[in-house]
Amino acid sequence: MSDTTARAAQSWRWLLMLILITFVLYVWGLNIWYYGDDFQYLYRNPADRLLYFFGHRNLFHGFYRPVNSSIIALTQLFAGRETWPIHLVNILVHALLAWLVYLFMRRERFTNTQAMVASIFMAFSQENAGAILSNDTFSQISGTFFGCLTLWMLYRGFVGSIDAPRPSSAPFPLLSYLLALATFVVCLASKETSVSFLPMVGVFFLAAAPGTDAWGRRIANAILRSLPFLAITLAYMWVRLLIGLSQPSTSNDGTYGFHFGFNIVRNLGQFLFAAIIPASSSTTFVAVQQRQVVTLSIIAAASLVFLVAVVVGLMRGERNRTYLPLAAFTLLGLFPAALMNHVGELYLYNSMPFISVFVGAGLGTLLARGSGMRRYIGLALLAVLLAVHAQAINQKRTEMQRNGDRARALMPKVLAYMPQVPPNGRLLLLNPPTREPEYSIFLINGYDVFKWGEHVFPQEGGRPDVTATVIDPEELSKPEYQSNALILTLAPGDSVTVYGRR
Image (cartoon, rainbow, N blue to C red):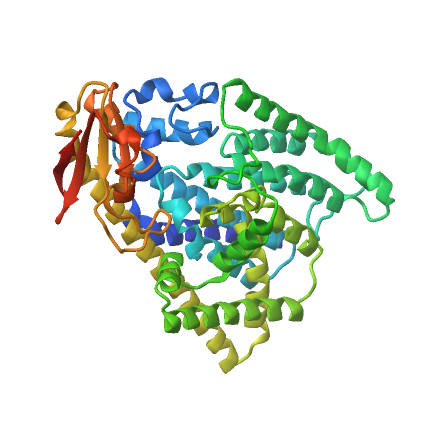
């Protein structure tokens, strides 16, 4: 068997292993139910929504994510309100993305150990749990996967591997280029933050230029070859404008407004921390809120040790020609999200494949350089690292499962009161007072499991004249809530009770 055939067989075996690993990590979350803004994708007539959102807006949010909408509509068409098909798709595509990391590193002559560690880190990182376990985040997974697939197609066509570099006299790789354009279309149709792959394409063409070319020629060719990708991006933005979706804003209010200030430094710092912490981010958030000094010290020390190990490994290992463009991809993947007033860890997913390459290259070098007892200690520490990440994934899964179960249990209880809401009135879901911390999609209290998806009650209750709103106690005195309203609150045991009528 030739080396090429053996390497191909090894790659396919590793793909099966990655699928198995990812499935075992996330199988317990297959049935996490809808909650929060998931309800923006709950359709009463899914058969009519399979391709609808490619040319129409979703009335409940201002984003253009037709690929995600179609996957969820297809799921609801064949599986009703069950969510396991969504999560199976998330798991499969995430495993394929981890495999793409492995394929790239092997093609670039990284060691098999480095490539395996990188792809395993991509699969295991607790940072990715929110994307894989949520019901409405295939948009993020798909955007990242097809964006990376675009770069992979270009890499295969314009660069080749260190073993088989593409000669400068070779004809233009038309097929690879067209495939890259096609995957780029799917990338943009997945999520808005996928526009970050446009400048990555430009950086790729700049880095892939023959070293003998003058910089002026390199830049000119990079711009010329990037023009079709720019045209696709402009067409994508025009479609968004045409169907009346929200546009970028420089408002300082709200989460999604862009702001050019200290928020960029803060957001980049949060992204870096989320990438390296070997603990659940929800645990870390609670520790910060409650000033748990011991817990924070342990997390900070473990994160620092991990970061130092990766950096030392990179410094001791052989330099690779892709490090500089990969560093650029990592940074570009965080934009435009890093410009927002507030960011969530979900947006880091764009850069995780590139971060995983650095992690694999660094830790893989340390493992390879070690001998005897040092090697066994390194393997043991790597096993501990992966076990900690697996535990963090399970913790997040438990938190999300609890949120979904609560939403599923509360919905019929609230719907039972819909006939009592005055005509053209309001249904106010009053959160009970609580001191429990809330964090992202993981730690949610009271009726906030319906936040951003309150329209589900008029939709499911057949009352289009009703407006449903989740409010906190301090909001109850607002003028718009003083009349024509039914107010529901929660008693212990999640018992839905009438707080009052106005």
